[in-house]
Amino acid sequence: MAARVERLVTSGQFSLDGGTWDVDNNVWIVGDDHEAIVIDAAHDADAIAEAVGDRRLTAIVCTHAHNDHIDAAPALAERTGATIWLHPDDLQLWKQTHPHRDPDSWLVDGQVIEAAGADLTVLHTPGHAPGAVCLYDPGLATVFTGDTLFQGGPGATGRSFSHFPTIIDSIRDRLLTLPPETKVLTGHGDPTTIGAEAPHLEEWIARGH
Image (tube, rainbow, N blue to C red; front, side):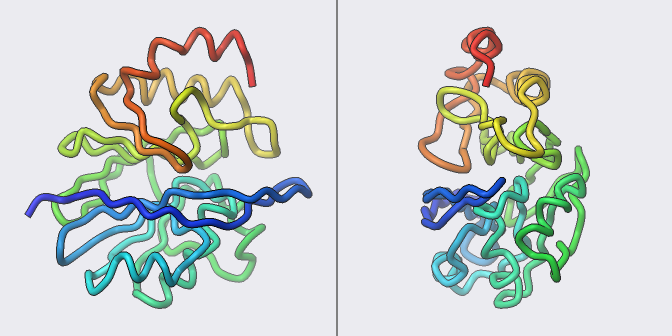
């Protein structure tokens, strides 16, 4: 059975640099009827576990370590036995939310995470956060971009651990080289495609962050 992608929207708060904002996050579940992985365990471990159902959850992959993308990860892992994956460059951010619980495994650029017919290639795309990653599956013609690329432009770079020229390099070199029909499934908000976003690169650069 081919893998399918499901979206769950959870609500909570994002906190960084002394500020707190209400946010809605996309939690992506990739798998089939028997096995699944979760991309970004945001806010509500109970709701995510309910959406996974009786499938075996093998991995919780964090696109980056801002609290709104990882706050439910340890509880979900404890409940399901899933492995938490994070890029090591985001450990400092992770520790702000979970000082006493490390991730289980480290993401490496180019590695492939397999789940129920999906093959998700890790693309290290720093800028929004040092250890930000995207996950690309050519078979699904889909890239999960976390907060690196949204409908309408790059993720925010106005806070600690972020850098606008770096996110532009990541998007240009790692994402806009993907086929234009590739679906972009984001950490917040609505999906887009690589082809829809690619023409705006120069505009983003001119606008800055």
